[in-house]
Length: 169
Image 1: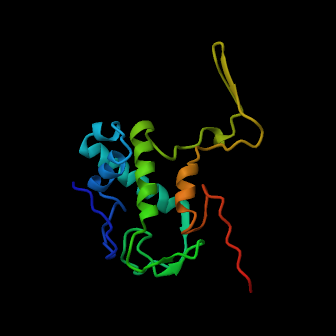
Image 2: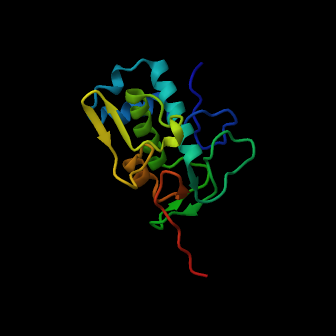
Image 3: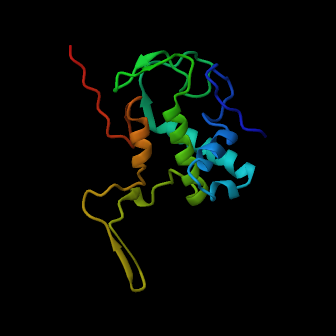
């Protein structure tokens, strides 16, 4: 089944914020050859997973436009943290770039969010003579710092975000 992309018109069955063609361009512009080696079905699956990860992880500024849209974007117009105005009925470039980054990671490593093993509270792992111990307070799940930075201007909060919105009253 072909990937259905949100284009800012409130697509009721959209699955991704980014098309395969746009993801190909994103990675080609970075002289990457790994993404181009993936099959179209693998790219589509990666873009669906990346979009789902973003929509399930982050809370965004403004409100969704209709109750029938499948994804969290498009949204009403608003000013981001940088005071840049985001037009309604659009999908911001920084959101598309974040999808491209996560899709690449999904293609290379599989699931972006895996089920927790024992509540993801394992401190030490040993296999033969190899042992790994994590520092106290280390994140228990994978983090995506570049994605957090790309989305920082449009995110209110998220489980993978460090944004906090301060507002004078």
